[in-house]
Length: 233
Ligand SMILES: NC(=O)c1ccc[n+]([C@@H]2O[C@H](COP(=O)([O-])OP(=O)(O)OC[C@H]3O[C@@H](n4cnc5c(N)ncnc54)[C@H](OP(=O)(O)O)[C@@H]3O)[C@@H](O)[C@H]2O)c1
Image 1 (cartoon, protein in one colour):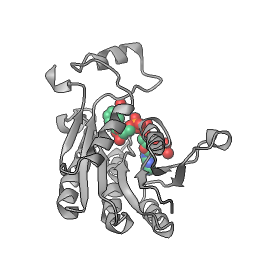
Image 2: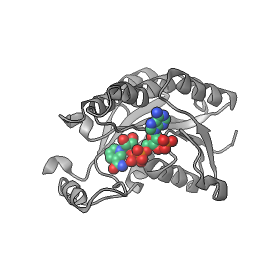
Image 3: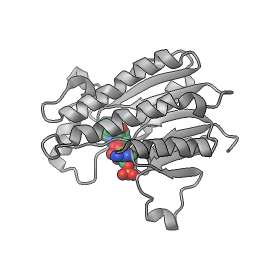
Image 4: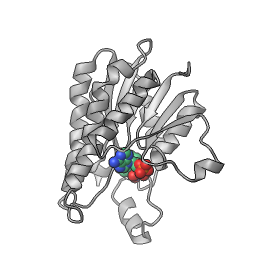
């Protein structure tokens, strides 16, 4: 493998994950991302400095297949970022809870269990879970999403205890980071009005938060609230 420190980001073919992957490359890291399918645009514009592994976390075999591939490649990780996420409405899909449990909890659990053999023993190491502000608030309409993200946050605490002192384990809980292209002007205005700072910050704030958690030697088992002051309004 690459002699550069290596970061694995799950579900990073787009948006926040892809931005963070590209920023890690800019800053001299080797980067591995996972995604469920290769993107057509990569044929004409290949990702530079990013190794892509196709992995679907909806089944145990899909998750285990990723771990086996990482072992075969003799990957030595500096950091693991659990970014993959699924947002389903409880009402629309009967198996919504099961699907989100697999992505938000089962995959992080199995990857974290394998982390000690996947990490670079010569470097400090970090696991970072990307949760969501709503996990701590609850939501009458999105119970499965909130509770599976809350489970992800709980994994942070237990793995911070289990893997110390060699590995720091933390959560980042963003509120609005970036809109989806089809979000209506009304939705955008309402979402912006919820935080004291009232901005759509973009994905760089997530990268800054990841780097803070990686660079500080004295923070583990915490949740970094990345929400523009949502609790102040
Ligand atoms: N964007 C925001 O404003 C915001 C706000 C709060 C929290 N967050 C959190 O920040 C993180 C990044 O947000 P985002 O908006 O960039 O997320 P996103 O666009 O929804 O991307 C998440 C990725 O997860 C992957 N994924 C979904 N189901 C999967 C499965 N079964 N197996 C493997 N991968 C799967 C998808 O991969 P494929 O593309 O390959 O299908 C998708 O690209 C997420 O954890 C999200 O919950 C974001």
